[in-house]
Length: 380
Image (tube, rainbow, N blue to C red):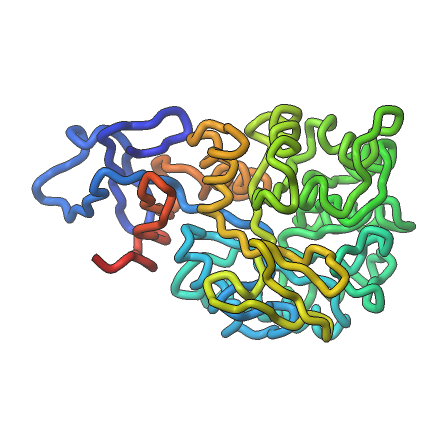
């Protein structure tokens, strides 16, 4: 079955030429004897998953191990779970370390990784509210300012694509306007912003929300809070960590009903244990432990996830009750549109990059292609 933006083709095929999709349709209309073929063997053929919030994987944490090799390891790990494009995420840290990590991502953008495409970096902090910092280290938070932002952007060599900040902080609107003018998407996150503050942020250029429900003011009857603002403002595309731990499945359903299935995108917020047997790792000199499918700091604070994109799709489909084609869209075309790359990635359509994932009916990944090249497959 081939999943396209408008239909599911039961006996479908995808024709790839020079790294791009040339044609999608019924197999009988595409298959020819002179073409090299790859049999999907009755599995699901989907667009490659796109993850806009990836802190680590394969034992590496980008912010701590700020190197090109670390980015490649993270990309390779997540490609085995169907991610074909990702934004390595740099979290709050000393300024020098942030710049080093952003530079490492820039190198991966320009050199490639040999597996998943690195489409730019996501800077989550340090311009966040300490009252909603989560696991982020209070010592390294900075007040929003263009003077603080500019060295980060310069270190990224123009590859910084997404910035998360708290819009209620002084000078945040100036940073939002400046970042947006540089082509950087801005997300609202780690915040206590109320409705009016979120509205002003959107007017200034913010278009996304980082891990809705988490590290933000909740929805109230007399005060919509940050969550209510995000759910009610159509211009905002909401990122959702669909591991069943960060957000209850019924709260996910509320979010998806409020935003519509086209304005919610799935993220992993993944940490180093993904793709490994690790049971703990160090962050800010503290031990983070894997426990009951989640990650927790010493005081019980959630510290990212061990979620993978294929599992996020499965959870949204099975626990939240979203039809599979819509769940797949939340991991493919929705993040592509939110990141401004929907014209080249996110769906199986002629002219787009041939980023393709073949999964079985339990969403276990069998084969992954990036720009028409196989970067992962399960050995038979």
